[in-house]
Length: 164
Image (tube, rainbow, N blue to C red):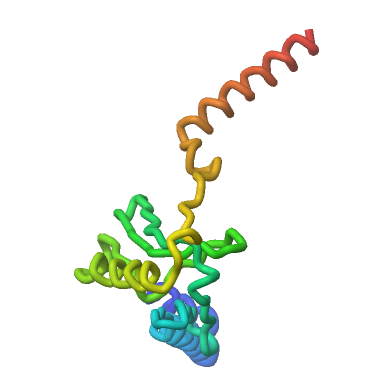
């Protein structure tokens, strides 16, 4: 941001610098506001999710089929985010409740267990159905790379044979 400020002051003058600085502060303020207003509540009526805009949406217990934790591992570390599966097959992450190496939450497991307990108390066991694994979870990046390599080799071979 310092380089942006110096560049704006040099190339755009004081007025341009003011606009760039003001625009940057407005964007940072809006993003911070949305993050701070994102939350999840759980009660007898269901799970209410708000992503920072509006009042949020309540998903009643009879629409929730499964609750699990999505684990993502990337270059910044490991992150855990709880999510719900709905009767229509859609998934919704629960904002405000997550754990990662960068932003650890010491109470994550306890809070997640509370949500699962609410679900178990509020729903009939027959409607709680563990979703089947989708293709994208069964085929890893290495398998995709091997398949792509084979397809590319076959296409190059066919093009080479056709050209000669």
